[in-house]
Length: 162
Image: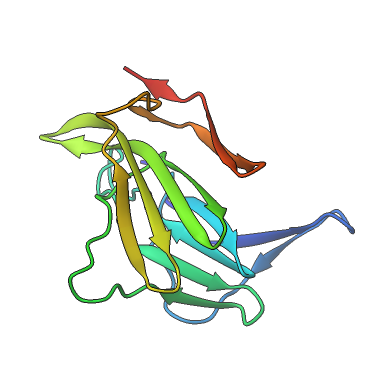
């Protein structure tokens, strides 16, 4: 059985050293296959899984306040629904908005690849589904892919698909 971890490490390129961080506050449950992005000096962590055979897919969003070394769970406003729980998805941040694509979860005990695309407004604390992946020339269902922002565009590479 794999051990799911909840530790935080920091690497300092200028000194070439790793240090274990010990954030205060209520911290996220242990998990694997989550994603994280930087926004305004904070680390936003979404999703992942922490059950046997990669079950218990998470849909929670956490913020690590780096300067204060403090964890905080994002509490969404009433009526706001997060994306379905998932793992092996990818996230980027651009212009003050977080973007998340794909990943996988389980439906009826079977692996379910995702092609949905969401944005998150960290000021209003609102998720918005941008596409369901069923229209246009989207990348299609996949997990384990990579995303990056370059010159105002979101680039997605690879992953495992159908």
